[in-house]
Image 1 (cartoon, rainbow, N blue to C red):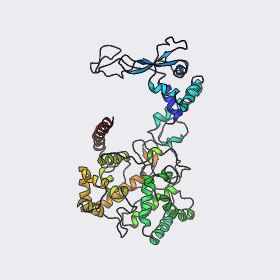
Image 2 (cartoon, rainbow, N blue to C red):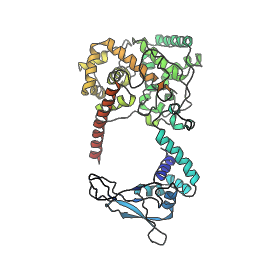
Image 3 (tube, rainbow, N blue to C red):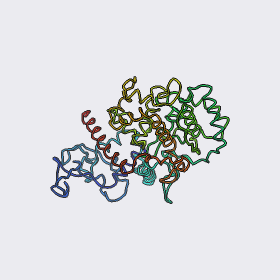
Image 4 (tube, rainbow, N blue to C red):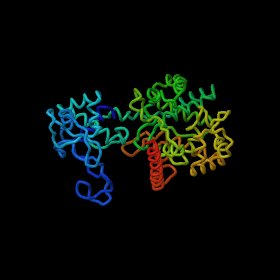
Length: 447
């Protein structure tokens, strides 16, 4: 949220209700103020922000400006703020929290407080926009929303229209041009695959954001991420092909180039589903940047779940491309895709990074590493399926569909390949509790 949205949501949210109650030593449960149940926990703050806390109004903002606010100790010993009139008398029975008082002590927020204290219509307009973003932000692009009250696509939805399918004759001609580039320089196979992965791997099944549709990797902020270093050089290699086939979007070209690179390096043949449309800028995609956690096993599990991948898919992709310290990663000196990464990792002979070694520390991942080290065909099959799934993950068709479902020759929809729904759900729940406990422990230690 930006400053306008933040201030609107705080003020709109505090138009209603109150904080409660005076619970100094939880658990409490000694009455209506403190809660009824014997194990009740309350915030420890007490009071409402307005004198009409069941009515929508802009009184929160007028209260902030209309009184002098005095720091006091609340009923449970917490610091909160009480109003004083200009002559020093007690104001009405309302309160503010320190976070509320902060809004009038920062110029970027104060200007909104001053505006909305006198302009209810402006508040309603800004609150409606921010509320829609808050409640629809996990829906992905506007195409996934249903109903006759859906507004036009908003900037934060990063929506692009669905394009026309790519003619098979054009696809074949583009493939031939890409293969010519790979024949001229074998390292282009790995470069194309690396570019396509970096373009697509921002996809998050948690909020249906990210993915390669739009090819925002060409623009800031994504073009400036450390993980995307060198992408501009690979895009320059593809420029002549784009000029030769101007009707093909860059996002389609990037994905098709990735497929061509993997297949040229010995990977399994993979279907291509065209129809992506290029975005005009990088959009509001800062939040899609790679996230880093410790221990590294938590980072791997988090990345897998956020992308909607199964352990088998995730390990297959990791062996091929994800955690490469060079563009070529699992491409050997002969520019071929093989299970050599897993063979070396399983035997501890590889000069592996700490992140790669973390795959051996996670038992489920370690088992898959062993399987792939012994069966190259199984690795290539899993890699091709997982790659296709990620390249098409953001090709939405309504709220639940995928326009590429029929074109990918049996590849399942995002989040379902290789694992029953109930098993996926159970795994998600089990991991979330473990990750949450680890994160809370680290936070408490830091505090």
